[in-house]
Length: 535
Image (cartoon, rainbow, N blue to C red; front, top):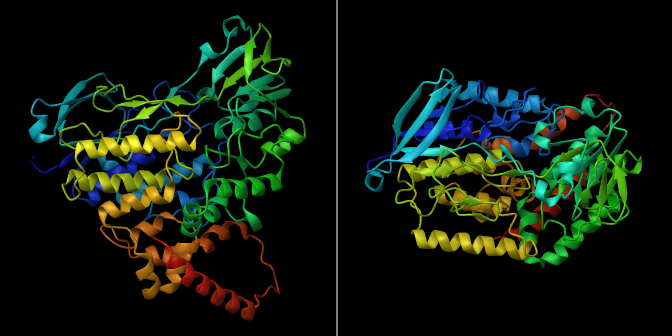
C-alpha cells in the first residue's frame, strides 16, 4: 500500500478540529468537511434545531473543568472559569483554529453524501468521497484515509413504543435535542423522561418557569457536584493515577461503598427519590449542583417510570397519576453514519465493533478511523485528540494494528467486561476508563510516561502526575508531539484553576511555611511507597 497522504475529515466539531491538527503534525494533508456554515459542532449553539446536527441548549454549562477538558498542548485561557458556558468553549475552539492556522483546511457548507471503498481498496486503502455544496453541486474525490468525527448526539432516540397511550396524549412532546430555553414551559406541568446529565440539567432549567416538573427514572442515579472538598473542581480531584491504582487494588464493591458514602453525605439519595438500583461508578453518574435544591424546594418531583399516558396525564408504575402539559424525552441518541456502508463500521446500541473504539477490525487496510465515539466520565476532547494522534500514526504505517482476529477478540473481551460491570446491560458499550484507555493509546504512539523513572529524575513533577489530576498535558511530556511547555503547565494547573475565583484580594493571609514543608515531606514518603506498587 502506498503511503497515506490525503485525509478526509468529516465534521468540524471538537473532534474534527483536533483531527485536522494531528494530520498536520504528521505531515498529512487534511480536508475537513463541515455541513453547516460554521465550526464547533455540538458546541455551536443555534436557535434553529437541525435534523442533521447536534447542538447544546442556550444555558448549558460544561460538566468538565477547563484543565481536564483542553487539548494537551493548548490550555484554556487562565481567566476562563473552570466550568464554562458553552459560548466560552466555542470561543476556545476558535482560538485553537487561529493558533494552529486550521481554517484553510476546512470546507464549510459541504455535506458528505457517501464514503465508498475504491475497487483497488485491498491494495491502496483508498476511498471515494462524494460531497455536495450549498448550491447542490456534487463532487467525488479520492482520499487515502478517512476520519469520521460526527459525534453521537445527532439522531434522537425517542422510544415512543415504550410508552402506551402516547398517541392519545393531547399535550405536546419533544426530544431534548429540540430544547432551547425554558420560556416555552412557563406555567406548564412538565414530565422529563430520563435522568442522565441532560435530563437532570433540563429538569432544573425548566423548573425555573414551569408550574411543576416531574423527573421520571427507571433506575435512579448517583449525583456528583461540580465541586469537591474545599470547592475544587471535582474532576481534578477524582481522576488521578493514585485513585486509579487504588481502584485496581481494592474490590469494586469497596470502592463503590466509599463513593456512595461520600455522595450521600451531600444529600441522601434515598430521601430524594434518586437512590439507584446499581452501585456507584457502575453506570454514568449525573453531575448537577442544583438538582437537590430544586427537589427539596418542591420545584421538581422525582417519579418512577411512566407506565402509560392518558389524554392529559402520566400514569407512573407506582400507581400515581399526574396531569401534564408537556413531555420531554431525555432518552439519548442513536449512533448512525448514513454516508458509510454498514459493513464498513458495525456500530449498534449494544455492540460497537471497533478496535479501541476507533478502527473497524475487518477492513483490509486500516485507513478509516471513527473519532470520539466514547462515553467517558471526563471530557471527550482530550480523548478524541489521543485517538487522532494514534490514528494518524497508524495511517502513516508508524504504528501497526494487531491481526483482525486479535482485534475482534479484544472487542469481545471488552464488551463482556462491560456486561459484567453493568449488571448484564450491554447498552453502555461506549463506556471507557479514562486513565487506562489514555495510557494504552499513549503506549501505542510512544508517549506513555515511565512514572518510576520520572520520580527519580524529577520528583516534583512525578508527585503532581501521580497524585494530581491526570490532565491532558501529561501526554505531551515524552514521545512524538512532545510539547516543551507541558511540564510547567502541569506544575501550574492548580494556579490556573483557582485564578478565576480569586477576584477579591485578602490582606494578611499567610501560609504556615513549617506546616507546608512537613506536608511536602510526608507526601514524598507516601509517593516513595506508592510508586513502587504502580504498574
